[in-house]
Structure formats: C-alpha cells, structure tokens
Length: 210
Image (cartoon, rainbow, N blue to C red):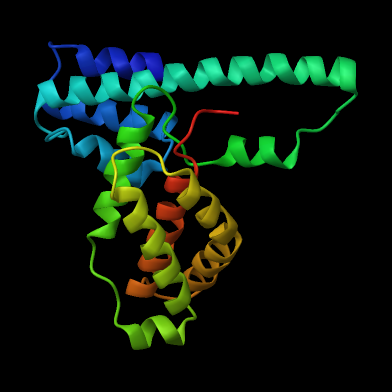
C-alpha cells in the first residue's frame, strides 16, 4: 500500500489505536530519512506513537512535512539535471549530487531540529571502555567526532566548521561501521561505530539542499 493509504489509516478514528499505530509504522517503512529504526526513534520523541493516537497524528504530520519537502527537492534536482544533460552534456550526477541523494537527511523546516535532537540523543549514550575502542581502532574517531559534536551542540544552529571536519571523517567512519558489522554478534562497538557515523552524517548534512 502507498504512503497516502497508511497516512489515511493513521488519521482514521474508527480504527483501534493498535491498527493506527501499525499504519504509522508502515508509513515510516516507506519514508525513513534516518533509516527505519532512527526515524521511528525521532518520532517517538513526540510521545507514545504506539498507543497515543494524538501523538501518532502529530508524528505523521512531522513525517509528512519532511516527505513533502524531500519531494520538492527531488523535483528541483530533476529539473536541474535535465538542464545539465541538455546544456552541459553531464550525463551522470556529480559526486556531490550522489552524496546528497544518499544522505540521511531530514528535509524541510524541521531539518535542524531533527538532526540536533538525534545527535544530542546519541551523544548521551554510554561509550564502550577506551581499551575496547582502541582494540577496534575507534579511539581516535571517538575523540574527533565527540569534539565536533560538542561544538555543534554548544549553539542551537548549524555549525559549518564542524560539518566540514566531520565530512572529511565520513569515509573512515563508514569503513569502521562496516568493519564492526562483520562480527558475528551484535556488540557495543558495532553500535557505537554506527552512532559515531550517524552523528557525523547528521552534523554534516544539517544544511539546505544543494
């Protein structure tokens, strides 16, 4: 079913809270700018989106705003690409365009609030012991990302300087997250590597679309 159908079910007061909550989860499956788990976690900051129908509708409205904004961005991107193909003979998107297309990014007027809220949440999570971080080659990345995240959170606005530094670290962070995922069991290090990567991504992409 489409996002629109699931959205209609979330708002349908004839349905039980359980069915409306399930419909919200299905809508998140179809549009999840932070990935399903972290998009749901962000919406859960609004309230109990599994039992409270008012929180469900509010969360849906937040999700719809981002989805509509993302659709408008894609329309503008498509228009620009058509011009580039016709006038500049650029048949493939640039590296910057590809990065933007793949970025975990909450489009729309709530962009900064959404990114900051999730970075703040991750920054407060427990960190594995230094010895474990060193063993997996994460100690330097932990220090570097933490320093830039602290600078980003110090003021309630995007931080272009931190965005540039963390953008430069993203290749190493993605490699580290992929490396720790190859272990057979879910570990604190795997979770932390992914948290570091996502904090860097969200600080880096806390800015208007290209």
